Length: 121
Image (tube, rainbow, N blue to C red; front, side, top):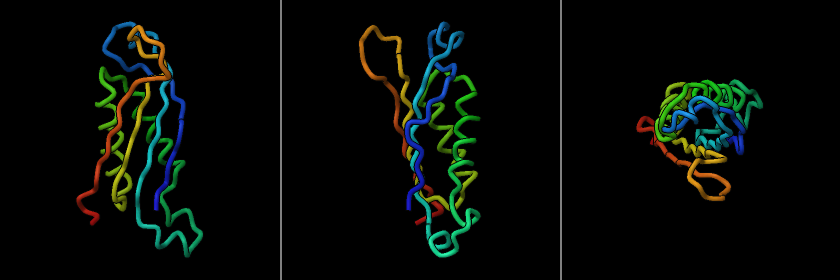
């Protein structure tokens, strides 16, 4: 089973350029976490699933820490998901900088990262 958050809009202060770290900008974050669903499909209890409100809180906390590279932010998010949700089998994160400072008209630029949990087969 997969829990996902799609198009989470976050204002953050990431970037290599000093202006990006000073002024900040809009980011879109997409996350998918694969995990065992066996308990939740039977119990109907939030305690038996991967709670996406906790996932949202985790993303907000990691996005609030300024970084030069989105790769670094994505790495922090994936490692934190692995730590906070040990039953997950994999996590995929996409971070899109909505208005990247590269002199081109585009919908955004960013990174994607997938982390498999070696403890889960």
